[in-house]
Length: 416
Image 1 (cartoon, one colour):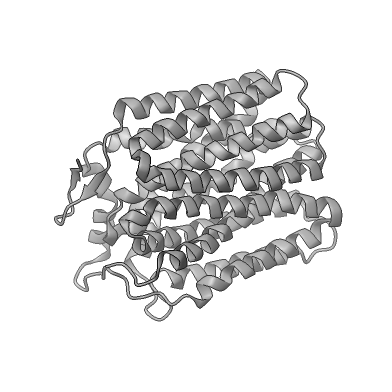
Image 2: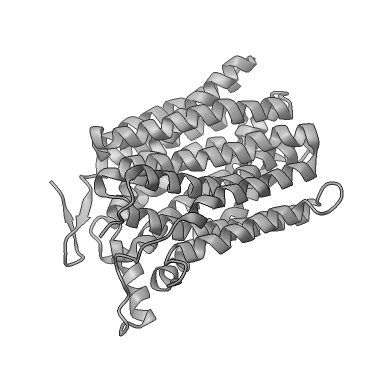
């Protein structure tokens, strides 16, 4: 049974939650590569910093425990979200305490810890989203999810780069921590209703874990679906793993990179996520994946064209905007299908297994992006990334069938 919250209240709450995750992640994945490149770090080393996002890939390991246990007083999901967000804010504010700039080693350790906190919070947030949203709200809900996360990333990446360029390290980290605290207010005011599914008092943890994770082994079509998850966003992340360094090597200043990501990226990513979420139900999930995936591949190819010759700042901004727009649309479509597959009693676990696989693929692609860009040059690197996006579209065409839903017995069936 879903909650009595109206759609606007649900979407507002989810916006704040996903924005909260995007804020620190945006700074460490978008802002940090620019700062490291300005300091002369090599492309392979910058690419390898993406491995610090490992907690996002491994979160499926503790997701079943979070599905099984939760606070009765604070709420099954809210009881995890609130303390984790406060810890993340405290860590960011703590980085602002030392005089001057924090050492690279301390910064990288902080990145790993923030990723651990944010990834764990994401498990609870995804579980809450599945429980809150009605079937007809999934498209908009996932559009809001992607939009909120992207807004957080742009604020944490683009806006914080501008702040860093103007004011330095301490005001940047203080601003980031305060923004995260402000984004915590909606969930702090939220009163989570009793979970629609309750754990059986007689069911032991081992059986719960087995049911949560073995579902995917038994589910028909899992191999083809997991391959789609691996391919669909890997090409784009292979490209964007070197986007910031490409902009730096194009002689853009910190403020110019910040404005490009903060203004162009913010607007285009927001519009793309909302547009994609709104169109998923109208187009149908299969057609949405095909159309948006094709647009995403074309947008990545534009980066290759931009890297082949002298490109003006307006042209770079246009290419960046188109890529953010199509990426938002493609991501919203993919996340909608992922959420539609989840079982209510294992909502966090089912979604997290899929999300972790996506993160493994995208993180691996971003990690090797520096080696690819250094070996091939930016133009051929972006061309390779576009080709990988095209392979993903072909895989959707060959293997993806109408969405599967769960019948009362808990076994998947193909919907008509």
